[in-house]
Amino acid sequence: MQVVLSIESGQISSDMLLRKLGNYSRKNKLYQAFRELGRVIRTIFLLKFISDQKLRQQITATTNKVEAYNGFSKWFFFGGEMVIASNDPEQQEKIIKYGDLIANAVIFRNVVDLSDVLLQLKKEGFFWEPEDLAALSPYLTSHIKRFGDYLIDLDNIPAALEEQLNLSF
Image 1 (cartoon, rainbow, N blue to C red):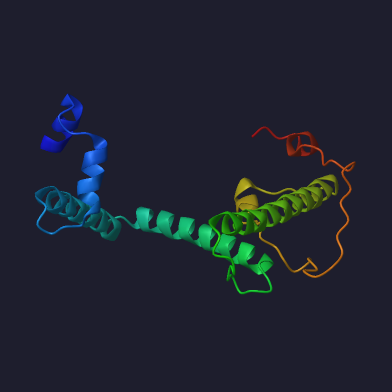
Image 2 (image 1 turned 180 degrees about the horizontal axis):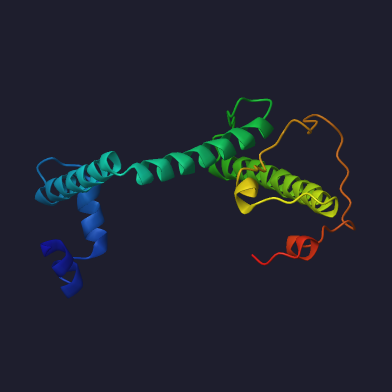
């Protein structure tokens, strides 16, 4: 509380506070206080996690989604097993962003294809519940030729999902 009040009153700057905390000195009283506060917050979270089944399920589901995306994007990073050979931070950032761009483009295409299939099913008289759609994933790779030739048709713009299915999201 003292630190918060000191920052508010201008007696200590945030730069100085971060410098002190960045030293990781076990003798520094401020570092010790924040370390103990962190331990208290972590303990409270762990107790909530242990006692709340819904929270555990939510965290597990979210973690699984993130891991599914990571596995999906890693699938496109061929020829190096996720090793970035350059030590240049700009090159590293480009490689990561290009990989994410490719993964997002494939996700977009998968969503368009899934939407087309759902529209066709609706035209044929099959209906689904929102719970059914929640189980679908855009992280599909079985139909992709990783080392194939790719042609981009910029004139073929997919229609909005709301227009196709007459849904309001």
